[in-house]
Image (cartoon, helix red, strand yellow):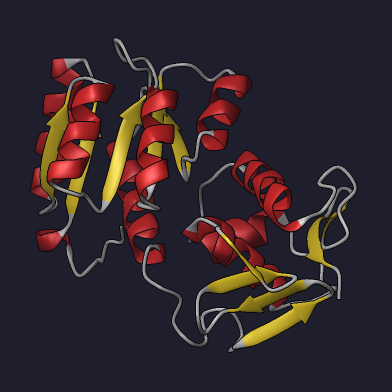
Length: 238
């Protein structure tokens, strides 16, 4: 399942939140920005709504009755690579990591500033587009050992076998591949991959790099392609 993004007027956002007051305030704020908003008070309702009216982006609260936010995120991620933002009232690092490991593209903590959330939503929606030529250095294709990256086709192959990457993972890999051997800092990658020029958390990058390695590395614990340069950032080995 794929989604497209034209403008706020045609963009559908699914808000998964059991607190009716928070859900209503989010709807009002997103309505004011011109988005079409669907609501779901439970994870089970979210899955049903997602199937009936596929959204362009999903906001999921971690603490939901029944199916929790992590399980809901995993269920939606199995169906689509739609951008997902986890919303949590806790700043515990493990909660944040669990949300990103479940397949979320980003997270926000309560109480959040609506202006910042809106900026993140816009950035994620922009990044949900298929990569346009020139987004990462006009790299149509590249080969790194057993890894072949076809940006023009939106495909990554390892020893001839197609790998399934999320759009964020694909963008991350393409950004690194466009600068082979060059170290890109977490701030660079937040800007280039997520479009976050003044906010964002380096943990976003770290977790997505870890997930990317599980897909492109034969031994993720001893990577040959996506390397860490301690204290500086990441690079793709040429």
